[in-house]
Amino acid sequence: MAFELRQQLKLSQQLVMTPQLQQAIKLLQLSRLELVTAIQQEIEQNPVLEELAPTDEGEDTDSRKLDSNQEETGPSAESSEQTAEVQMEATSSLQEIDWQDYANEYEPLPSFRPSNDPDLPSRLDILTKKQDLQGHLYWQLNLATLSEEEETVGEFIIGNLDRDGFLRVDLATIAEATGCDEETAEDMVLTIQEMDPPGICASSVQESLLLQLDRLDLTKSLAARIVRDHLSLMEKRNYAGIVKATGCSRAEVQAAINIIIGLDPFPGRQYSDEEPHYILPDVYVYKLDDEYIIMMNDDGLPRLQISNFYRGILKDEQAAPGDTKNYIKEKMNSAAWLIKSIQQRQRTIYRVVESIIKFQREFFDIGVEHLKPLVLRDVAEDIEMHESTISRVTSNKYVHTPQGIFALKYFFNSAIERRDGGEAMSSMSIKNKLKAIVQAENSAKPLSDNAIAEIFKKDGIKLARRTVAKYREQLGILPSKLRKSTTF
Image (cartoon, rainbow, N blue to C red; front, side, top):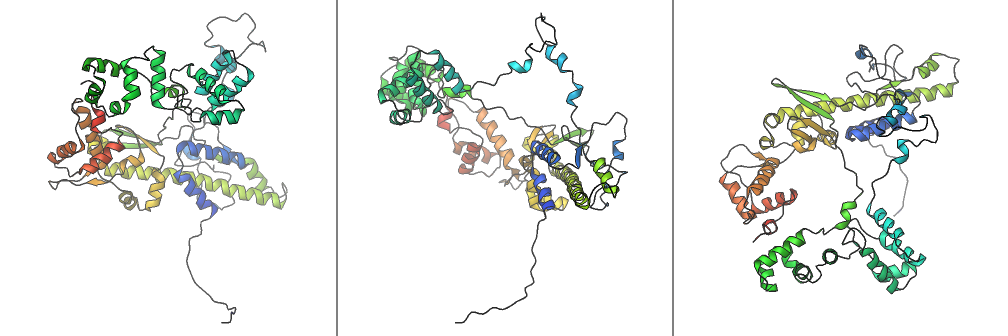
């Protein structure tokens, strides 16, 4: 069979995404904090783009608009490049703050040296980072009288503790990594186990609990015996089995269990250096009379404009060579597109929230129990956008409502049919009802998944046992045997 070259025409359609379109899609799915970071990066990379200073009171900010009909070379000199619909407030200038007054505002004692003394320590010199578990143990290790080899081994052991405070390497690994013998490695493990917090450097929860009991001089107690020999029964809350296995009275077993419950199975977590994650809503929804008002949260978002300096260079034919002007035009187009993309992002979020309020009006009026089933397609058809756009808009976005702060994804959930043929309920409403049922149950006789399904059945809600189990796990609710009260 002979091979030959031939030419053939083929007509096809395909979507080619320009860099500007890719940027607009990226901005659409960013969270509020990520958007601020992206804008700051663009300001640093694009010399034409500037952050507008705060306007004085009484200034007509609406007069600063971006003309969408202007040429791609950039906006005109009479109009600003800042967004019209979206007012993005800038933060106050750091130069306006009197740092000297701020630093001395809360000084408890008067200074005996002049306030302008360069040797006088400032508050910035005494700022500290929250101490983590390793730092806490290194501090104790430095206070101990150890040889250089023991310090090296101790530092290696501390460095291999996980966030729970457990040692995840064996003695052979420690000895091989530090060049010591296993006896020295074992001695250093025992040394660190004597440090604070109690139960640290254990290999398991069981060993950690035994170390804590040993610190309380309860090594030979019933509590230590239960942890050592019958911990699996305690995990299942089979207290009758513990009574039978130990031969002790119920009162004695109950007292021992109370001691064990007071221990910390994960001693390292109390020194966790994880910082809390604060949520800033992207949208505020307020109720005024019988209407809901939507306000975009623009606090902290830079207000953008195109530099008049570079605009003047383009106007002056002799101010710069052609290559420089082409570069400025390119950057102006990029800046104008960024501002328009931010405008479009804010408008789209506004329209999505407006549609959500239309579908979930009873939720905003009453509460979670009246949340209705809703899917992305419903909102997409309502505002005539694609489902993928709605998905991007609702990702990592939060709204402040009269019922609290919720993620926009919270309002989209599946439907649960009713046995009586009534209006379907949302899965989120079912979860809220499930949580209320568990909270109201008798802790001595917790309800099984079948029993909870029967309660829903009496209310006319069609819910299978496995669905109850799935929702219970999603809510972080333990099975009935683990919800049983510790008293018996």
